Length: 239
Image 1 (cartoon, rainbow, N blue to C red):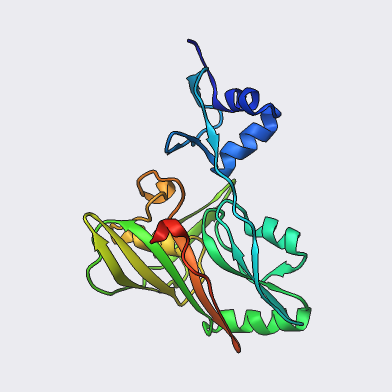
Image 2 (cartoon, rainbow, N blue to C red):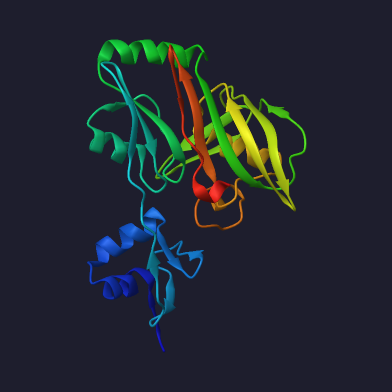
Protein backbone atom coordinates (compact mmCIF):
# COMPACT_ATOMS: atom_id res chain seq x y z
CA UNK A 1 0.00 0.00 0.00
CA UNK A 2 1.50 3.31 -1.10
CA UNK A 3 1.79 6.39 1.05
CA UNK A 4 -0.20 9.59 0.53
CA UNK A 5 -0.44 13.00 2.16
CA UNK A 6 -2.55 12.93 5.32
CA UNK A 7 -4.94 15.69 4.28
CA UNK A 8 -5.72 13.95 0.98
CA UNK A 9 -6.55 10.69 2.75
CA UNK A 10 -8.79 12.55 5.20
CA UNK A 11 -10.53 14.39 2.36
CA UNK A 12 -11.39 11.09 0.66
CA UNK A 13 -12.41 9.45 3.93
CA UNK A 14 -14.76 12.28 4.97
CA UNK A 15 -15.85 13.30 1.44
CA UNK A 16 -14.68 16.87 1.98
CA UNK A 17 -12.36 19.20 0.07
CA UNK A 18 -8.59 18.99 0.43
CA UNK A 19 -8.61 22.48 1.92
CA UNK A 20 -11.22 21.54 4.54
CA UNK A 21 -9.23 18.42 5.44
CA UNK A 22 -6.01 20.43 5.79
CA UNK A 23 -7.78 22.98 8.01
CA UNK A 24 -9.01 20.22 10.34
CA UNK A 25 -5.50 18.81 10.71
CA UNK A 26 -4.01 22.26 11.24
CA UNK A 27 -6.65 22.91 13.91
CA UNK A 28 -5.43 19.85 15.80
CA UNK A 29 -8.61 17.74 15.86
CA UNK A 30 -7.56 14.81 13.63
CA UNK A 31 -6.20 11.61 15.18
CA UNK A 32 -4.87 8.21 14.21
CA UNK A 33 -5.79 6.11 17.21
CA UNK A 34 -4.87 8.31 20.18
CA UNK A 35 -2.12 10.16 18.32
CA UNK A 36 -2.75 13.60 16.88
CA UNK A 37 -1.94 14.11 13.19
CA UNK A 38 0.52 17.00 13.39
CA UNK A 39 1.47 17.65 9.74
CA UNK A 40 -1.22 17.88 7.07
CA UNK A 41 1.28 17.24 4.27
CA UNK A 42 2.98 14.39 6.10
CA UNK A 43 2.77 11.08 4.26
CA UNK A 44 1.03 8.04 5.77
CA UNK A 45 -0.35 4.78 4.44
CA UNK A 46 -3.26 5.37 2.09
CA UNK A 47 -5.56 3.00 3.99
CA UNK A 48 -5.02 4.73 7.36
CA UNK A 49 -8.27 5.39 9.23
CA UNK A 50 -8.47 8.79 10.91
CA UNK A 51 -10.97 10.23 13.36
CA UNK A 52 -12.03 13.82 13.95
CA UNK A 53 -12.45 15.08 17.51
CA UNK A 54 -15.65 17.03 18.10
CA UNK A 55 -15.13 20.62 19.23
CA UNK A 56 -17.22 21.54 22.26
CA UNK A 57 -19.72 24.38 22.03
CA UNK A 58 -18.93 27.88 23.29
CA UNK A 59 -20.66 28.42 26.64
CA UNK A 60 -21.74 31.93 27.61
CA UNK A 61 -21.18 32.35 31.35
CA UNK A 62 -22.20 35.96 31.90
CA UNK A 63 -23.35 39.05 30.05
CA UNK A 64 -24.31 42.59 31.05
CA UNK A 65 -24.15 46.00 29.36
CA UNK A 66 -20.32 46.05 29.45
CA UNK A 67 -18.87 42.54 29.26
CA UNK A 68 -19.43 39.01 28.01
CA UNK A 69 -17.64 36.07 29.65
CA UNK A 70 -17.51 32.76 27.78
CA UNK A 71 -16.04 29.34 28.38
CA UNK A 72 -13.85 28.83 25.31
CA UNK A 73 -13.38 25.24 24.17
CA UNK A 74 -10.02 23.97 22.98
CA UNK A 75 -9.33 24.06 19.22
CA UNK A 76 -11.06 27.39 18.54
CA UNK A 77 -9.08 30.62 18.25
CA UNK A 78 -10.08 33.59 20.37
CA UNK A 79 -10.85 35.50 17.17
CA UNK A 80 -13.27 32.78 16.03
CA UNK A 81 -15.07 32.98 19.37
CA UNK A 82 -15.30 36.77 19.16
CA UNK A 83 -16.76 36.54 15.66
CA UNK A 84 -19.40 34.04 16.79
CA UNK A 85 -20.34 36.08 19.87
CA UNK A 86 -20.23 39.41 18.04
CA UNK A 87 -18.07 41.51 20.38
CA UNK A 88 -14.40 42.51 20.71
CA UNK A 89 -11.72 40.67 22.67
CA UNK A 90 -10.33 42.02 25.94
CA UNK A 91 -7.54 39.42 25.88
CA UNK A 92 -6.67 36.18 24.08
CA UNK A 93 -6.21 32.50 24.78
CA UNK A 94 -4.14 30.19 22.60
CA UNK A 95 -6.12 27.95 20.25
CA UNK A 96 -5.73 24.76 22.31
CA UNK A 97 -6.15 26.53 25.66
CA UNK A 98 -9.66 26.25 27.08
CA UNK A 99 -11.38 28.37 29.72
CA UNK A 100 -12.47 31.91 30.55
CA UNK A 101 -12.36 34.43 27.70
CA UNK A 102 -13.64 38.00 28.10
CA UNK A 103 -15.20 40.25 25.44
CA UNK A 104 -16.20 43.90 25.71
CA UNK A 105 -19.42 45.54 24.54
CA UNK A 106 -18.43 49.23 24.52
CA UNK A 107 -15.32 51.37 24.20
CA UNK A 108 -15.58 52.98 27.65
CA UNK A 109 -15.40 49.60 29.35
CA UNK A 110 -12.58 48.46 27.05
CA UNK A 111 -10.46 51.43 28.11
CA UNK A 112 -11.12 50.74 31.82
CA UNK A 113 -10.17 47.09 31.34
CA UNK A 114 -6.99 47.95 29.41
CA UNK A 115 -5.94 50.19 32.31
CA UNK A 116 -6.43 47.28 34.74
CA UNK A 117 -4.32 44.96 32.58
CA UNK A 118 -1.63 47.64 32.17
CA UNK A 119 -1.31 48.13 35.92
CA UNK A 120 -1.31 44.39 36.68
CA UNK A 121 -4.57 44.56 38.61
CA UNK A 122 -6.13 41.58 36.80
CA UNK A 123 -5.90 38.14 38.41
CA UNK A 124 -5.53 35.28 35.92
CA UNK A 125 -5.29 31.70 37.13
CA UNK A 126 -4.52 28.68 34.95
CA UNK A 127 -4.55 24.94 35.57
CA UNK A 128 -2.00 22.81 33.71
CA UNK A 129 -0.73 19.24 33.57
CA UNK A 130 3.03 19.24 33.06
CA UNK A 131 5.86 16.79 32.47
CA UNK A 132 8.05 16.66 35.56
CA UNK A 133 7.61 16.93 39.31
CA UNK A 134 6.48 20.21 40.89
CA UNK A 135 6.49 19.57 44.63
CA UNK A 136 6.67 23.11 46.03
CA UNK A 137 5.60 26.62 44.96
CA UNK A 138 7.92 28.55 42.67
CA UNK A 139 7.81 32.13 41.38
CA UNK A 140 9.22 32.65 37.88
CA UNK A 141 10.30 36.16 36.93
CA UNK A 142 12.24 35.52 33.72
CA UNK A 143 11.62 38.17 31.02
CA UNK A 144 9.98 36.96 27.81
CA UNK A 145 10.81 38.00 24.25
CA UNK A 146 8.20 37.26 21.56
CA UNK A 147 9.15 36.90 17.91
CA UNK A 148 6.12 37.51 15.69
CA UNK A 149 6.61 36.08 12.23
CA UNK A 150 4.28 33.52 10.64
CA UNK A 151 3.45 32.15 14.09
CA UNK A 152 4.39 33.88 17.33
CA UNK A 153 7.18 32.22 19.29
CA UNK A 154 8.33 33.30 22.74
CA UNK A 155 11.51 32.63 24.69
CA UNK A 156 13.30 33.64 27.86
CA UNK A 157 15.59 36.58 27.07
CA UNK A 158 17.15 39.52 28.86
CA UNK A 159 15.90 41.57 25.90
CA UNK A 160 12.30 40.56 26.70
CA UNK A 161 9.53 42.17 28.72
CA UNK A 162 8.82 41.64 32.41
CA UNK A 163 6.89 38.44 33.08
CA UNK A 164 5.81 37.02 36.45
CA UNK A 165 4.21 33.61 37.04
CA UNK A 166 3.49 31.91 40.38
CA UNK A 167 3.37 28.12 40.12
CA UNK A 168 1.75 26.02 42.85
CA UNK A 169 1.56 22.20 42.93
CA UNK A 170 -1.86 20.54 43.09
CA UNK A 171 -1.17 16.86 42.29
CA UNK A 172 1.94 14.80 41.56
CA UNK A 173 1.39 11.51 39.70
CA UNK A 174 4.55 9.63 38.77
CA UNK A 175 6.58 11.91 36.54
CA UNK A 176 3.85 14.43 35.85
CA UNK A 177 2.22 17.17 37.92
CA UNK A 178 -0.96 19.19 37.97
CA UNK A 179 -0.27 22.82 38.82
CA UNK A 180 -2.00 26.13 39.30
CA UNK A 181 -0.30 29.09 37.63
CA UNK A 182 -1.19 32.66 38.57
CA UNK A 183 0.19 35.24 36.15
CA UNK A 184 0.80 38.87 36.98
CA UNK A 185 1.61 39.81 33.39
CA UNK A 186 0.16 38.70 30.07
CA UNK A 187 2.99 37.93 27.69
CA UNK A 188 2.44 35.77 24.62
CA UNK A 189 2.66 32.07 25.61
CA UNK A 190 3.80 33.16 29.08
CA UNK A 191 2.59 30.11 31.05
CA UNK A 192 3.95 27.70 28.43
CA UNK A 193 7.37 29.39 28.23
CA UNK A 194 7.78 29.81 31.98
CA UNK A 195 6.86 26.19 32.71
CA UNK A 196 9.32 25.04 30.07
CA UNK A 197 12.01 27.20 31.70
CA UNK A 198 11.79 25.19 34.95
CA UNK A 199 11.93 21.86 33.10
CA UNK A 200 8.20 21.18 33.35
CA UNK A 201 6.63 21.84 29.93
CA UNK A 202 2.87 21.56 29.51
CA UNK A 203 1.78 18.10 28.37
CA UNK A 204 0.77 18.23 24.71
CA UNK A 205 2.73 21.43 24.08
CA UNK A 206 5.26 19.99 21.63
CA UNK A 207 6.27 23.49 20.51
CA UNK A 208 7.69 24.20 23.95
CA UNK A 209 9.07 20.78 24.84
CA UNK A 210 5.99 18.88 26.03
CA UNK A 211 5.25 15.27 25.13
CA UNK A 212 2.58 14.70 22.43
CA UNK A 213 -0.99 14.44 23.70
CA UNK A 214 -4.53 14.97 22.43
CA UNK A 215 -4.31 18.70 23.26
CA UNK A 216 -2.21 21.22 25.16
CA UNK A 217 -3.22 20.59 28.78
CA UNK A 218 -3.70 24.23 29.76
CA UNK A 219 -6.96 25.71 31.06
CA UNK A 220 -7.81 29.32 31.98
CA UNK A 221 -9.56 28.58 35.27
CA UNK A 222 -10.25 31.98 36.83
CA UNK A 223 -10.11 35.67 36.05
CA UNK A 224 -10.87 38.70 38.25
CA UNK A 225 -11.24 42.09 36.55
CA UNK A 226 -12.67 45.23 38.16
CA UNK A 227 -15.77 44.06 40.08
CA UNK A 228 -16.07 40.82 38.08
CA UNK A 229 -14.95 37.32 38.99
CA UNK A 230 -15.39 34.35 36.64
CA UNK A 231 -14.49 30.69 37.07
CA UNK A 232 -14.46 27.89 34.49
CA UNK A 233 -14.60 24.28 35.63
CA UNK A 234 -11.76 22.07 34.43
CA UNK A 235 -12.41 19.90 31.36
CA UNK A 236 -13.09 16.21 32.06
CA UNK A 237 -9.65 15.07 30.93
CA UNK A 238 -7.99 17.35 33.53
CA UNK A 239 -9.40 15.39 36.49
